[in-house]
Amino acid sequence: MHTILITGGAGFIGSHLTRLFVTKYPNYKIVNLDKLTYAGNLENLKDVENAPNYTFVKGDITDLSLLRELFVQYKFTGVLHCAAESHVDRSITDPLAFINTNVVGTASLLQAAKEGWNGQYDEKIFYHISTDEVYGSLGKEGFFYETTAYDPRSPYSASKASSDHIVRAFYHTYHFPVKISNCSNNYGPFHFPEKLIPLCIHNIINNKPLPIYGKGENVRDWLYVEDHVRAIDTIFHKGKIGETYNIGGHNEWTNIDLVKELCRQMDEKLGREKGTSEKLITYVTDRAGHDLRYAIDATKLKNELDWLPSLQFEEGLSKTIDWYLNNKEWLDEVTSGNYQKYYNKQYGV
Ligand code: NAD
Ligand code: DAU
Image 1 (cartoon, protein in one colour):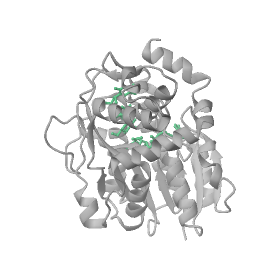
Image 2 (cartoon, rainbow, N blue to C red):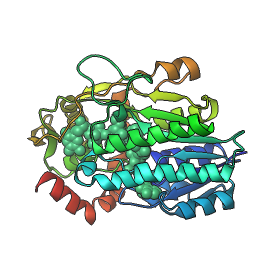
Image 3 (tube, rainbow, N blue to C red):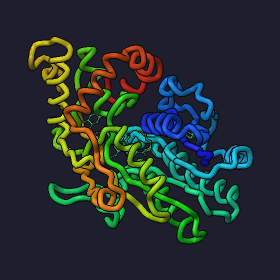
C-alpha cells in the first residue's frame, strides 16, 4: 500500500504518469500537486479525475509550509517528482523561473520529505524525474551513460543538473531513499505545442510556417511518452535506491528529417497532395547555445530491469498525430490566450 505524491501531474509526462498509477494501482492513493502554470492543464486528466484513489491539490513546490502540511496530512510513502519548468527556449528568456522551480522547488520537496519521514526510510522512495540534457551535447559519435560527467549548457539543463546534484547529496549525506532517471525527448498526446513535434502538428493543421532552428541538423533521441512512464513505473518498483537509470528510445532523428516525416504522414492523413506540408518548412535563427546531439545508452535499464521501448517511431508518431487531429478542442484551448503572445515573441511574428 502506497500513498504517493506526484508533482506536476497536470503536465505532459506527469499526466501520463498519474493516469498509469491511478489506473494500474487502485490500492495506491495518488495525490497530484500542481501549480497549474501555462503548461499544467487538468483537462489532461479528465478520465481519472473522479477516481476514488485520486486527489488534486493546487500548489507550488517552492511553498515549503504547504509541502510540510501535505506530508503530515497524507503520510506519503513515495514521491514521483515531475514538476518543472521544462522548455529550453523559455529558460533562455527567463532563467530565474527555472532556478526557482527546478532548483529551489526540488530542494524544498526533499526537505519536506526528509522532515516528514524523519529518518524512517524503510519502504520510502523519492523518485526524481530528470533529463538527458544534464550531460551536455554530443558530437556525431557516442552516447550518454549514467557515468557521463554532467555538462549542462542551457539555464534549463543547468537547473535540472543542480536538482539532480541536490537529490544525490541527500542520498549520500542522509542515506535518503532516492532514485533518479534521466530520459531523452518524449513525444505523444497532451504535449504542449511549444515543443517541436506538437508545434509543427499545430502549424501544419493551420498551414503556418514550420520554424526549424539553424540548419535542422541537431539530433534528438525520441521516446513515446507511455514508454517513458512505463520505465518510471519499473524503476519505482524494481530499481535500486541511490541509483540512476538512463531512459531512451534508441531512436535518433535530425530535426529536419523528423519534420519531413511528420509532413509526409500529415499530408496523407489530411488528404493533402504529397509535398504540400514540406513547403511550410522555414529555417529561422538558431537557438542560443543549441546542443547538437543527444543520444542515450539505456543498456543498464534493459539488463537490470528488463525495460525496452515498445513502439517504433513511425507508429508512435502516427498515433500522436491521430490524437491531435481527434482532439482539436484541446489544441485550440491551449493555443488561445497567452500562447499567442509567447509565439509572437519567440518567433518574431
Ligand atoms: P511540462 O512543462 O509539460 O509540465 C510541467 C508541470 O509542472 C506542469 O503541470 C506545471 O503546471 C507544473 N509545475 C511547474 N512549476 C511548478 C511549481 N513551481 N509547482 C508545482 N507544479 C509546477 O513538463 P514535462 O515535459 O511533462 O516534463 C516533466 C518532467 O520530466 C520535468 O521534470 C522534465 O525536466 C522531465 N523531462 C521531460 C522530457 C520531455 O521530453 N518533455 C524528457 C526528459 C525529462
Ligand atoms: O532531451 C530531453 C528534453 O527534451 C527535455 O528535458 C525537455 O524538457 C524537452 O523540452 C526537450 O528539450 P528539447 O529542447 O530537445 O525539445 P524541443 O521540442 O524544444 O526541441 C527539439 C529540437 O527541435 C531542438 O533541437 C530544437 C528544435 N526546434 C524546436 C522548436 C520549438 C526547432 O528547430 N524549432 C522549434 O520551433
